[in-house]
Image (cartoon, rainbow, N blue to C red):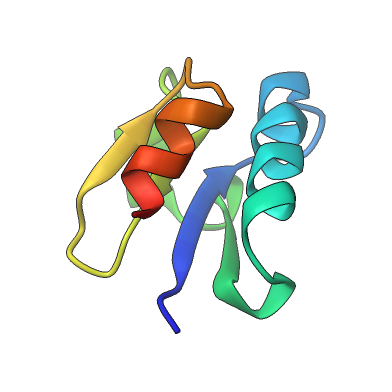
Length: 75
């Protein structure tokens, strides 16, 4: 079972939308949440691009994405 990481932060309405899309397509144990505020290097990398979904191969899907784009990324 592949896992996917959602780079996000609290209070980000786009991140909440991305999480809803992920929850619709994946099981909860497949989703890893990483709050960028907790790690300075993540803030530097993602502060202007969150939400971002990454797969096990470190490929990334940046916002904006919809259900179809996310499904293609997951598959």
